[in-house]
Amino acid sequence: MAQTPEIKKDEMYRLLREGDMEAFNQRKADGETTDLTNCDFRNVDLQGMNAIDLDFTNSYFRQADLRGVDFSQSNMHGASIHGAKISGVFFPPTIDPYEIFMSYQYGIRLRYK
Image 1: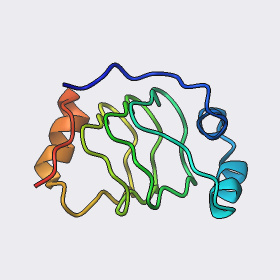
Image 2 (image 1 turned 90 degrees about the horizontal axis):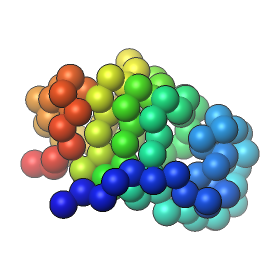
Image 3 (image 1 turned 30 degrees about the vertical axis):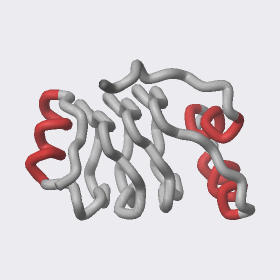
């Protein structure tokens, strides 16, 4: 059962919510880690985020701006992208395009093959 998405007090998560991708990406490149599972990203602009090796399990991206983000090496199991801007997004190859459509259109949680 999926948990309710939450707004965490984590500093790296706060940078994402505020749209400071430069600071987030730099801190990530410097080896800082963060727990982005079960996070609320509703209406957040995540363009430019380095999502490689991040875990977004059960996170909620309703109406978020994800354009151009490469999630191909991220864990998105149980995430929802209902109504998000997804032009140019790379999703993990183990998520069927139909799953992406159903999550985008109806808000179902993404499932892997």
